[in-house]
Length: 370
Image (cartoon, rainbow, N blue to C red):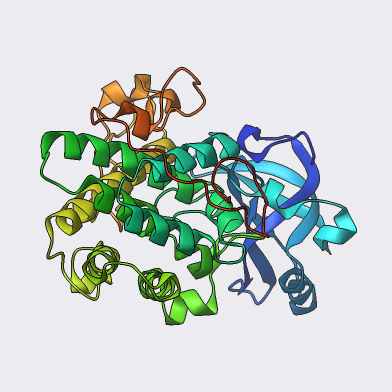
């Protein structure tokens, strides 16, 4: 990959390189000339680009290929950098000898470290039936790798490679603290729900050369997908307490909280109520932080962000936020001195679970088969 990152663009400089085409639209000016509006991406940023004096034939070439080799210049428009493309060549990943994943935004945390954190979290679930359901779901072909790499959303929150796993581990930390305060909650049930609630996004979202929705995601959705996976796992295991399986499935089905937000049912158990609110909290605070970073207001700038669909308001960014850094965001998995969620719990350590046999899809080490 080229050394010139899109986040470092400066007005007036020349730019050459290969970039992922995030969006492309064929347009026409008032005098009848055609141009293409583009959003080009590397792992550091997405930047708008314009190709003047284009043609429908050229646009069809762009549509057929996920990447563009471009040569152009950087201009400033309404306070933001944009690329005016002088020359372009549509290319495929194989032709350009590039790894598509290198062009997508990534979690700032090490994926292997987060995966190990997840292993410890599952081992901390003391109820054997719940733990076995979680492991059985995760044993679906290819799911372990997909869980490690998938985003948690297309644009709204944790929309980057590893975002889903980061979101789950952040929720686990909040769930631990909620269970420490409301000690009568079923910790194992809540943590199992945290792990599985969004795992269907591995099938709902596509993320090979950009973030979008699959046909299965559009027509079924991650909530219904996970519900089916839990039923499949329970049936295959054969000896699971039906009430335990039912409560876990309900927790997944109700975690969006309202029917109009996509949940088939509203939360009806204490753990389902807790799951909904901690999920909503993490998603919205992550979305707020993302909106702040994208707005990047200066000391004398307006402190109001753009209208935000997820937050349902125009967010206000206090000046104190200008001094904050990404280091303050959970989870701090890059610091080996900081224990994982299971280790931080004030409850007695769980009895060590029997180590499951390695799956044929052994794409990672550790005590669990992923």
